[in-house]
Length: 121
Image 1 (cartoon, rainbow, N blue to C red):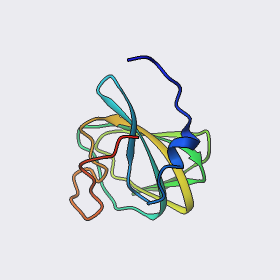
Image 2: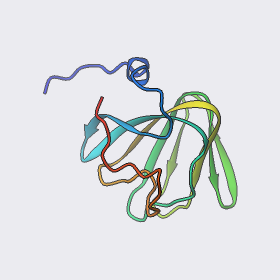
Image 3: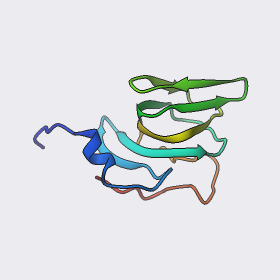
Image 4: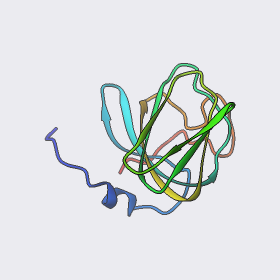
């Protein structure tokens, strides 16, 4: 495979729906994913996977049971495995995530928001 640059704005322009991650790359058994988010997601945890969230545009609020972290453009947040969390955003926010290929977006919670087969952009 020949390395090529990825323009995030071009990838984000390819969809409008919320809370539906897309895969934009792979490295070392990890998926690089992007999603547009707004409103509240569900409380969940990942027993075996750490997650990285980076904000491209907007503001991500990550609720933990004891506090809320605010993540702005150019910032990232690492969520250790086993940590219960709930992402949310007041306005549309673009996020990039790096996580193991096995990671389900809803962790151990099965719901209508669970996405098993992700589109590759």
